Length: 441
Image 1 (cartoon, rainbow, N blue to C red):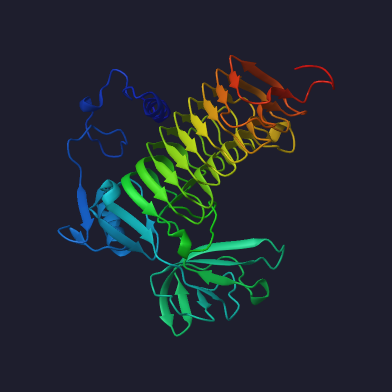
Image 2 (spheres, rainbow, N blue to C red):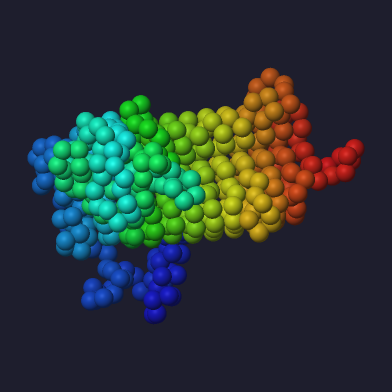
């Protein structure tokens, strides 16, 4: 079997739950050098981390990182995070073939309160040190976010690094910033970072653990850079039974990540997004999760394709339960329960033209309740959106009468199929702005 065929079957197994190898059951495989197809082993290498009675004793990111690094040294396995509260001054940096297994609500990783300072000297793109105006609260080993206005185009520069050495108010970075941080751009350093970070990694699982972003004591860092979990350029990731809460930014964010499975997670009370399948992510599966009291429950970012959002519960998100837009095509939004969204239950964002719109998506059998304020909309299809199927949804508003709408189709949308939707308690069931004035939709 060639590698392409094997990978196809592995993806099919991920989505369908069926055996990945056809007639060849995993138990019939033999471990062979260089072959990623593995037998089903009864036991794999596991190392425990905890405040006491653990293989590695500790309650901070250093102990957790030591567990990850030990497992990686021997080709992969499980880091079992024992009950305890772990205070993090830097991200736990994940590597390929690692499973993080917590103890549910009893394993709590908490981001430390931030320290922040302006820079006191220019840092050029090739430098590997920064000078802080006020080093109070900074320690060697801290994760830091360096931010400034770009001197060339006045855009935002954001760089994440670790402090490796110190002399007074001068700190060595683990890597050069590769960006100019000049005093003219008002550069700052702040101890901001994700709790779990993984970049250019694959075959990772994070399960049964609680992550607390401590947003009351930390500044905003958006989901393009951080979150309780932040993944970049990663493949074959599973997040299951993760509680992510209180981050001043996103809960779970993955950017240019493929074959990500997110199941039975609870992400809530973030400043930013609950679930953020980010730019270019292919074949994301989000099932049986809960997203509450975030800015947006699920945010399909940019070029997110062939994804599935199914049987999720999305409650009290300040803007929309689900937002989908720029080149987010061929996704399925099925059987979700979306309640009390601040503006819209499901929003198809307005993009600049047909090619950049959220085309060929399916919205089916969702329950959407009490969306927006007095002018709220349950499903709002904006811009040049094309070829969207809206079928079998139950839209309901239980509040006193107001100028609310079940489904609104914008004037530039086309090829929108509506069928079998049940709409109750709103002033306008379907508002089709494509129709000539005075003509009923």
